Each structure stands twice: as C-alpha cells, then as structure tokens.
Image (cartoon, rainbow, N blue to C red):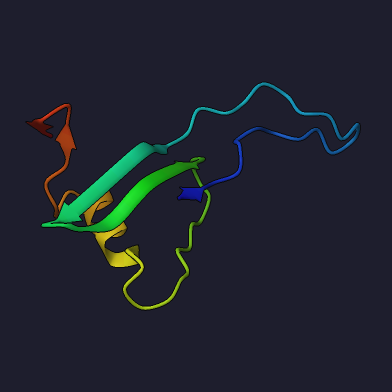
Length: 83
C-alpha cells in the first residue's frame, strides 16, 4: 500500500498547521488487476495544486499502471462501474 503524507499548510512563523488545502489530485484505495495479478493495490494519494510528484520503485511495482489510471488510459472500476 502506498500512502502520501497528509496535505496541509504549515505556518512557517509558528510551525503550526493551518486548515488542509484541497488536493488537485486525490486517489483513495485504487486497485487495478490484470487477471489474478494486482498491478496496483490500495493506492492512496493526495497532491496539492502546484506540487510535483515522483513515483519511485523497482521495475514491475505498478508505477506506470498508476500513472495510466490517473491519466485515464486504463479503465477504472468504481463499484463495478467503469469510470
């Protein structure tokens, strides 16, 4: 399972967290299977607008599949509906 850190703004003067920013991209519990193989299993991700994201990992761990799902190049099932 991949988890991104919680999104929120930190006040640089006091070091306290302000109200969380609304993510520009958010995925929760994304799973993509190819037959019996889970290429992506439980992807949770939240990215603020203007931030840069890097997916790192070994060959075959699901990086490209995750990006293809986000970009809309792979079909995503949502409660047995294709979205």
